[in-house]
Length: 105
Image (cartoon, rainbow, N blue to C red):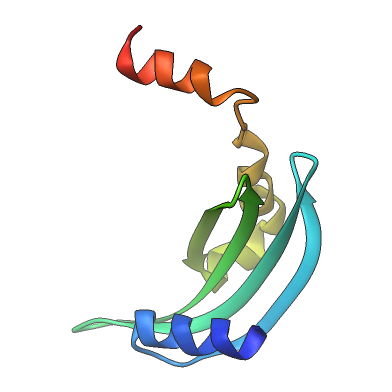
């Protein structure tokens, strides 16, 4: 599975990724896969090493993906800041409640 993830991500980003780590973990008490990898982002006049952190969670046969990417130089100064971003994620326990909020019933 890791090789498929790497290949798909490299295709999507149009660049090589490296230092790829995956770990089975929990996000809000739900089993998840935590991915971390680095890549080079290039523009007309810049080249930055970036880091991406991704959590993937399966709930009721639906895949939820949450991610954050940042220049590695900023991440290295305060990794806890970027890791705690995921603490703001909440899953609603009942889909009908979400429907009522979105549809306005």
